[in-house]
Image (cartoon, rainbow, N blue to C red; front, side, top):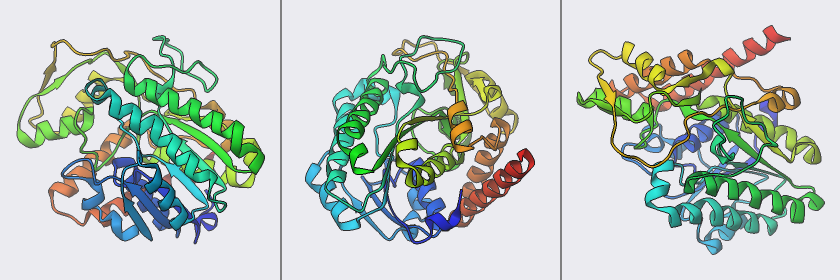
Length: 359
């Protein structure tokens, strides 16, 4: 990344009160960007937005619902960003079974409302819609999914994200390409990192079980997922935005940002690694009936590697180590604004070192 590109640049982050959005706002602030946020109140208590004092990184924010088109249009007209990073979403598979209407409302109609509002703001040059690795029609293949594989989704969450991809492509082709606005989508794997307190995610569930002295119940220990630290895909989103700004036609496309093949690991392996570093941790297999979830999932990120020069930096062991370190610092009542910034600084140092070594 080029830090000079971001200095003073106006950026709107939707979903800025969430886990990924909070890390992204901190990173953009360290780069000197003028960040505006649009989101609902933080989705959990506790939450990273409050703990790491994300509000202090912002030039402005709207606490509002992306399903309200008038409010979305007003927020964009007021903030007049040059770059929009769209992370607002209902992000959980199991929640989508319980709340399918809300899931489609946020993930599909919310995207439509945002894209419609963007059409009326002439300052915007780049839009990155962050979707998911689960937007692919999962065939339970052992090979990794590429950007030109079929989209789909058996559960409402995955389906809604595939729909969001299709909506974005249609708006790009119908309205934005001719206007010189670069509209891209970014598909990432299962992110982990400090400050994720969501229910029904493996690492937060594990940490809650350890903190409370309870037994973690694991649904699918043999399911394989592409695990990566949250800073990995965020670095990809920022790099993609830079390239798309310079060459709109060349980078207005979909890109995968996943870990190396070695970091696609079984759920049980991840739990054992966490348990080895957490005295007193206990877990067992949850054999209760449950909605369908894919067993195998990998991403092929060769397009991001070849076109963007992006590559993963922290392998899964390092990602787990830093996640546990962040959580322990929080439990120790450390300054989590500073801890969060320190981990971003460490990532930048390590990624720069890796790039120089590769060169």
